[in-house]
Image (cartoon, rainbow, N blue to C red; front, top):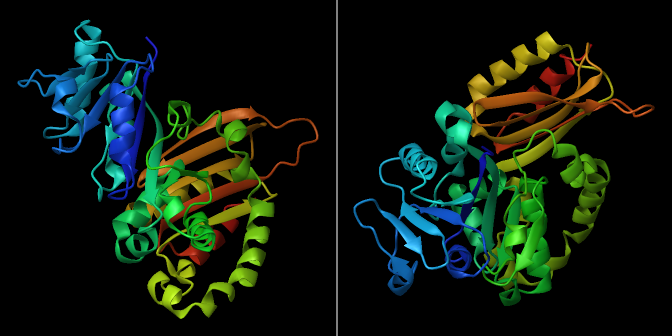
Length: 352
């Protein structure tokens, strides 16, 4: 039986998560979706569209979707849904998990790596983060949880961008890009996004990574362009003191959630790399949000693809290096105050 794809929906308070969930739960999209919510707020979903089965906390929607709350623990809820589906009591094709406004999506994502029983039924597809453009700069300044959510994302939707100026939106997008260069950003109206942009993004799919993330591999051009653009753009908003006061003066270089890229044309020595990454993850795992790489390893003609969330890391053999293709390793790390020099020097020492 094919694995059931799961989407984790996270985002700032007021960013439109509820709008997006309502659409998923009430629109006639023809997909059978189970939505797991952290809590049912009164404003979340109107009772008139619910057909309730209160004992189980599982609710069937009029369009065939299912809604339930996380009771003690996500794992239990997922196992219950999986078991009911196998017995033919529930029918759904995919799952959306909504985390609370300030939750850390990390542990939710880790559930899909750690738990064998969950991994036999469900496949983590992606983490989506909704950002409220109007309040984002302050939320990013004040709340580490908000910065983490940006760091974790595979896709970022920026809502309420019509409420800010083009300059402010540009500054926000630059800031987010520095925190997480991997995730495409899209300005949307509240949480109104087509479902095709929400599902099957394959953010955690190791094999397909190369095809679907061209930006990750074009990091080169991006990086230089970005920095050049940055230094140039820096002076501009400074002319508006009031704007400056509230936007936190060129704040985005000081965010504790940052990304950096390692690249090399030399091959890695597998044993050394494994030891080094193991040690790093041991020490810095809680601060490592997402990391991914396409590696040139000694002793294999294939690309090695790896990724991780916090302390959990996985790798896989990818496609063969093409004839005449420059073999090169690229890794991107997104984390909280990671010691960039230690990581880059350490990786350098794992090369042949």
